[in-house]
Amino acid sequence: MKEIIGVEIIERAMKKGCDTAEVYMKSAQGISVEAKEGKVEALEASRDFGISLKVTRNSKLGFAFTTNHEAIDKMTDDAIEGAAWTAMDEFVGIPEHAPPDEVSIYDKCIDELNEDDIIRNAIYLEECALDFDTRIKKVRKAEVAAGSGSTTIVNSNGINITYKSSYYSGHVTTLAEDGSGDSQMGWDYASSRRMSDVDIQSIGRGASKRAIELLDSRKITAVKVPVILSPAVAVEFLDILSASLSAEAVQKQRSFLSGKVGQNIVSGLVNVIDDGTMAWGIGTRPVDDEGVPARSKILISKGSLTGYIYNTYAAKKDGVASTGNAARGGFKTLPGIGVTNIYIDTPASGSNGSLLKNLPKGIVVLGAMGVHTANPVSGDFSVGISGLWIENGEAAYPVKEAVMSGNILDLFRKVEAVGTDLKFYGNSGSPSILIGDMDISA
Image (cartoon, rainbow, N blue to C red):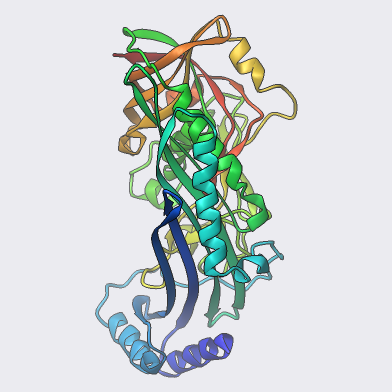
């Protein structure tokens, strides 16, 4: 049905003199439940639907959207009229058809869940966090969410695809207190397109463990020592790096990776992969948001930058092919560029425990505040950190209110070891990473 509607919109637009036309259609439904003190604190159910149309005419772009089936004709006319008022741009257009591979992104078990199932799991998440240790006094947020959706993309170059997807996630924040009056927060999160991949008990226990580990934290004096970034913190720095991998950012001179393709930009131990075909990954899909088949690609190989990520527009500007990284914020927006499932690859062998054992003195960073404030052009950052002070390969005491400063590329150049504990947070993943001497201030 959706494919038929899409084809009809395309045909109407082409008959009115458009050179190309592209329909993007999205429907989604979901539910999230937040538990507190064994009861439902908040419940939110959503159901969304929308259609958008992108057209080109004489190298001019027009765009419109609607949430109403009855307004499709008006949407089409609005998009065509919009193209009459925009400036000419030789790079606007749509991709050619190419057959996508099959991917695993829809778990029918999620569609079979009812409201009571989500409520029960949210309450269980809170219980798991509280039962971990008597010093866990409160759970600030225990939330479980699930949903599914359908996406249709049709264009005048022969692309016509509809696919279903699903998601399931759990998130919890805990508060630990001890007899000294100290209190610490902990959190954990997991998500997947398949429900069985999300371990509610593990999320609850993980958040509580983090809060307990930081009790009785001490301030430290300014030092320059190696640090181990936990997966949760490493992912935050990877997200800053990945933003500079966007060809759009490069073309607008907003990337610290501009002009560095083929160069060794980070440690030779670092391999960064963007994989849109990974089974059950949150960023997995058969095609990107323009209909270009998703694929797996190595963006940084043994420290060397192999290339950027592209949508169709940016690819035309550089005279290359799209990498299948067109991404929309929803049906109301034109496609930009975004990663699919991006992660730092783990070594073929090795023990994660050796990262700690080989550290005579340093800090395991368990939390970082303000990583998102890193300068997107220079890569400079200064962030608050908390974690564990290490002496002779063992945790000596927790650390609080410290500040780590540096540069994103310098940080990744200093990678001395990569762990085997790869963990994804959303569509970004990383193992623990040992970084050489970093500037730590009080």
